[in-house]
Length: 114
Image 1 (cartoon, one colour):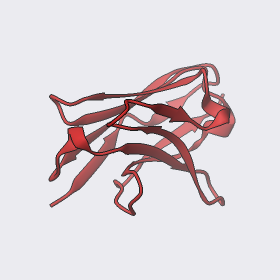
Image 2: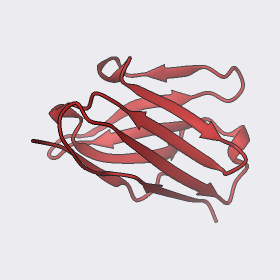
Image 3: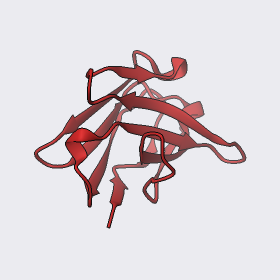
């Protein structure tokens, strides 16, 4: 059974940092393109970042470039999202997902507020 379990969300002040984790199981993690997607209250899903396994390419949506970093630990079957210089507009539920599919975790809430 494919499972994705996110963790690491929370309440942080503007300018702060958080690191999200996504524990993956039930598939060959090291061979699958992975993404982070977020959904803010009252809005649709927004793609945040993707890591492409074949070429090692990494992409970010413009609003997080220079602030967020996606990474993986294949030995731990874990996907990460390091988020720095957080802004109130980053507030959302963050999901990890198998790229190109509807498979995603239950999400972790990130709230950026003073």
